Image 1 (cartoon, helix red, strand yellow):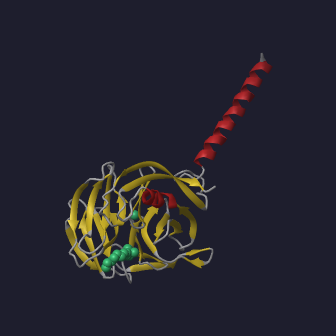
Image 2: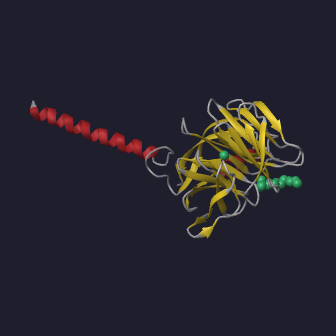
Length: 273
Ligand code: DDQ
Ligand code: CA
């Protein structure tokens, strides 16, 4: 009957709305969804993979095809390397001269840009074979982090300044002081460009700042002490700080590791409760 049918339709609509609400609740702080991320997020580990425990990770990026490029530091152990996701196997490596301490790394087209610590020397490599194609002078006071939105290079130098560098002229074209509610955020380190934002590890903390590349305003924080503390609890005494954010734009996957960490994590964000 008509009343029967209209009752069924109403019930169906009501249940659909409930399902949609529960889906949007569950995905509400998930990157790539349309809802803005919560200002403070925690994390949940989705996967963990092996990572070279001798890699003093200073730059990390995802290059597609289950492959990372990674820059490592320490004198005599600095490198740029191609690493397989899943196994952590180093598939190709270019070592730096022992006078250089490798730092931030980013990939634009087929060119890998790498800066070094306490020296103005920076390198460009061919990402196909890691051969060195060029040396240039880092236009920032020091070399810490690098990332790119596909147009400019973003850079950090351990201060509160976020730099934008033109990849052709290799000059600074813009700079912003990074601030959270008016307070300067210092020690910006490894960077990653994620959906229009620049994410930065804050050196010696378990925090990632989500920075607006337009004005340097910190839009939110990702708080993740559990990864490093878990490793230390599991007898990994020699490990250093969280460092290394890589974003897989294609599959919306977020990866994190740290200096001398034996593991690399795939994580999801969760609203901090
Ligand atoms: N930085 O990556 C934060 C820019 C530098 C980390 C330096 C850590 C010190 C390692 C020991 C250096 C030996 C001269
Ligand atoms: Ca990165």
